[in-house]
Every structure is written in structure tokens, then in C-alpha cells.
Amino acid sequence: MKLITRNTDYALRALCHLAKQDKVVTAPELVRALGVPHPFMRKILQRLSQEKILKSYKGQGGGFKLNKPAEEIYLMRIMRIFQGNVGLNGCFLKKDICPNKGRCVLRKKIHAIEDSVYKQLREINIAVLI
Amino acid sequence: MKLITRNTDYALRALCHLAKQDKVVTAPELVRALGVPHPFMRKILQRLSQEKILKSYKGQGGGFKLNKPAEEIYLMRIMRIFQGNVGLNGCFLKKDICPNKGRCVLRKKIHAIEDSVYKQLREINIAVLI
DNA sequence: GACAAAAGATACTAATATGGTATCATTAAA
DNA sequence: TTTAATGATACCATATTAGTATCTTTTGTC
Ligand code: FES
Ligand code: FES
Image 1 (cartoon, each protein chain N blue to C red):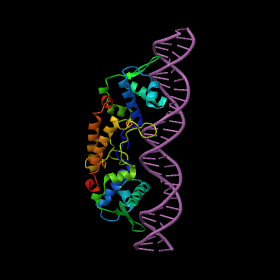
Image 2 (image 1 turned 120 degrees about the vertical axis):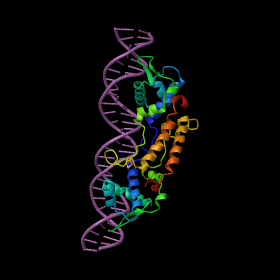
Image 3 (image 1 turned 180 degrees about the vertical axis):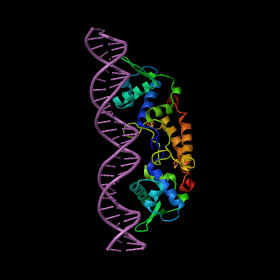
Image 4 (image 1 turned 90 degrees about the vertical axis):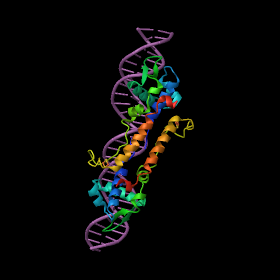
């Protein structure tokens, strides 16, 4: 059971690194610093850039920097980008929506757990991590 | 992000069904009742049987029944059987153990969340679900 | 203007986990 | 002896995640 995948993990490392260095940093530099495969890192950075988490500068001397303060970059946001909607999947009844939804105890329990996970996740941002 | 997989879900349904009917129930009966594919259900039941959660009776008139009271069959146990160790995977640093473990904030946060999830999961058993 | 060093776009492959099927052997009641 | 059940095991299918490769575009520097 993975709360966080590699994509997210690497993205967080990159963001933390960028948060510490308040300047434009190239992908190769991040690769050296974090030991993540180059093309993989590139893909992640591109995605973060598309999502306006990073600001990118093309051409020689280019690179990436944070597009907003570290305190405003939330873990949940990054998770959603790389892992889709963060939710704890209750019912697997074949095909469509469960007719038992209302009465299902497991569902309720899972939802309660979900809420407490959310609550804790929402408090984590890049500033907290560095 | 899946807290619970189909395996586990189906296993829980089967266990709940068995808990309600205090008698030996065959796999085909469970299949009818729950609408899970037959061979898949069989596999799940066999596993539960190996793990001493169920007691099985071979031969004609055979089937399965709970091997202990519903209150003593914990969700965590079932999850571990079908999903392996239940843990929230912190660090993905290439290969071996992370040298940064001690200082890693993310790791600590994830662990805290994990603990609260455990705490809640530990209180769920089959008796609670029915 | 040519070159080099960067990011952008996109398509592909590989590994892993999950979900599901098929087959044959064994047991035991009728 | 037949039949209806489980046991054991091997296999296939699908989805998700992880990772690679390649080509285009931009821009500072000589
Ligand atoms: S049985 Fe469908 S939500 Fe629980
Ligand atoms: S960096 Fe390795 S545990 Fe966080």
C-alpha cells in the first residue's frame, strides 16, 4: 500500500532542493544532486512546470525555479498530479455503484480513516519538509 | 491509492456472509450470494483456509465455516494476507536504505499518518462489519 | 549567424502488482 | 462407485507505475 509513489517522491525532493536554492536550477544539476535518472527527472519537472508549480526558462542558462513560495506548495497537490485523485477506494462490487452504499459499515469506516489521512496530509507543504 | 484491494474486499464479504450463517457453506453458494467469479472466490477461500481463518470440509456436503468468532477476525489480518505488509512506504531513494532516514521530515510525517491509520484499522473486525 | 545548452512534446518500452482462469488431484458423503 | 465438494498449482490478462528515447523549440554566447 503506497501512500506516495516514486514520481511524487522525486518531485518532492526536486521541489525541496529548489526551495533551498533560490535561483534557476537546471535539470542536470538536480539529477546530480538527487541521483534520479535524467529523462525521468526531466519528465517530472516538465509536468510540474505545466502545472505551474515550477517556472521554466528555456535556452542556454535556463532551468527551473519555484513558481510560488514553498509554504504554498502542498503535498496533496503534488500527489494529485502524479497519483490522480487521492482516495481510499471503498467498494469493489462488480461494475456500477453499490446499492448497499448507505448501510455499508466498511465504507463508513474507510471514509473516517480517509478523513483523518487527508487532515494530516493537508498540513504538509514544501516549507514543512525542508 | 488503495487501502483495500478486491481480494480483501471479497474475502471480507465472504467472511461476513459466513458469520451470519452459522453453518458450513459451499463456495458455489458464496458465489451466488456475492456475485464474485467462481474460481477467484475459490482461491480466496482456500487462502483463508490455509491461514486458519476458515475451517474447510472436503467432499460432498463440504464447504467452509469460520474457524473463530467474528470478533476475533481482524481486518488487518485479512489485509496482510492479501496485500502483504500494510505500510505507507516512505522513501524511494535508489536501492538500499536511506542515509537520510533520521532527519527526513516526510518520513516522520508519513509514519504519523500510518500510526493513525493503524489505530483505526485495528478496531475493525468481522463482528463490527455485520 | 552558428553553436551549444537548455526545456517542450511525445511516443515508446519494461517491470510490477493485481485480478482472474484453468486444470488436475484428493476427499468423503450418499 | 459416483458425485460434489475442497486442495494445489500453474497460468494468463490487465492496469499502473517506472523509466527510456527522440526530436523540436528556445535562447544566450561566441
Ligand atoms: S458494499 Fe458497496 S460500499 Fe460497501
Ligand atoms: S529521504 Fe529517505 S527516508 Fe526520507
